[in-house]
Amino acid sequence: MASDGFPAGLLHWVWPPLLIVLTLWLSRRNRQHRSGVRRFLVAIILVIPFLIGAGGLYESVGAALDRRIYDAPGRLVELAAGQHLHLNCTGTGSPTIVLEALSGGVSPVWGWVQPQLARETRVCSYDRPGRGWSDPIGHAQDAKQVASQLNLMLQAADVEGPYVLVGHSLGGLYARMFASQNPDEVAGMVLLDSAHPEQFERMPEEERKYESFRRLQRTFSAMARIGFWRAYFDAGGTFDFGGLPDEERGQMKAIWSSPELFKSQRYENDAVRAIHRQVRPLGTLGDIPLLVISAGKQPREWLELQEDMVGLSTNSTQRVIDDATHVSLIFDKETAAEVADGILEVLQAARNSSQLGQLERPG
Image: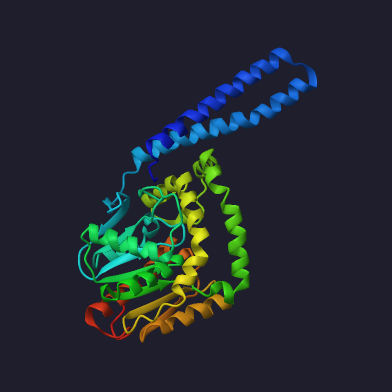
């Protein structure tokens, strides 16, 4: 629920009632000066702007209620540029686990994973700009910018390294860039069904799906502005996050009703190719513990890309969760528990400077 600036927030309150009043005035004029078929046709046409205005008012009221109901579970960290990012750290211990969400993701997506990890060490999730409780953003960010911003936020919040990075989907590329920029601060990594910088070249169908979704996604922010997504969630819809705990599921409904979320997703989708180009030439991770966790319900070519990333470290292994999908890895309670167990294995290997697989699995 990124907070709009005052002028934009005021506009969102003003335009819906103005449109409703204008529509009602035009409707009255229509009844006074037209008759027959023309009067009926104009009345039908005026229904559209009336519904848009009503939807916009419904969204503005809903967003205001969301801000009162869902306080930020973490803290707002101010960066040097005056921007605020939401950081949610729980638990104690070292190394700190840093969770980097999938494309379009926000901190509540870790609702099952983070509490399990917090029993063993400090773990931090956060919201990239324009999402959740972080400030809005007006432009796209590439991998270098996201990684640098993450580092600045951790420093400003006094979250000291070393870190075990967990990157889900596109978040895996951000994690790899962070490790490249800060190699001495990374003690381990988990690539959770991570994106691969060559996936479009090696999976042309994946590129076509990406382009198709990218075109469709450009309409989502406008749909949110007139209350479409809020109505969908109020009617019981949940997208993929229906399996999260009650609190995080409610947070996700509120966040995914926000026009700012879809705007930031659009920016991120626009930067995907640049992100791939930046990560492609990065070197290996040396000998830090690396676990590649892959969803079994993926195309064969995707699993081959997953296996390819195991070679990023000389201390690495892969685990395929056969019944998992790309999103059930974090949204399904039982699958998320398996993911958390794998992350804790990397944590223990980092703590003991040991090879993955030499320690007993947690639990």
